Length: 193
Image 1 (cartoon, rainbow, N blue to C red):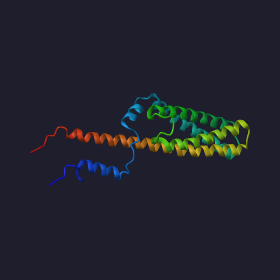
Image 2: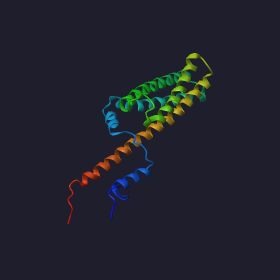
Image 3: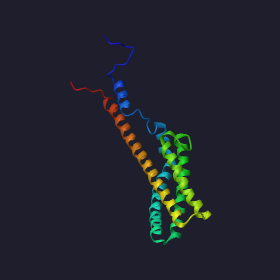
Image 4: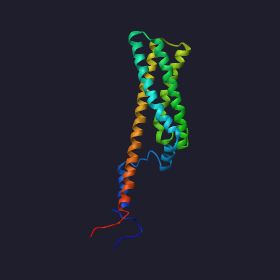
């Protein structure tokens, strides 16, 4: 005799629940509504353009900073490149906050991107310290360049965090597409005899 007041421990609902427990019961990166807002937002395109631009500016600037530290030459070019990198960073942070507001309903620290935003604050702080040193004439050239390198190291870590989130979003979309395809394959209910 089967009890009707409780779901079967081996039925589809139990198997799905066990699968979620095995995965650590993590919240999906995007709800369907958030994914739709993300996909429809022009700010997503802005972020997609600014991120590689910032990376290219970073690579050029990193080369100039290292050159200045090794040879003592090209300090002006290095300073200009760091200022440009910082301005691009500020731009991507402001537009990213707007994107987060559109997608998640808050400007910063949405649960899906909480730790990326926390680390972004450190990236911003170090870039800002560099600007204060440059325009306030604090410290030596070498100290300024070392602060820039510290800022760049945090930027690389933060970029890695965001790349991992992009990968997670892609994997989530693939998993949902597979999940959605399974019921569709069984909708015909044709069974060979």
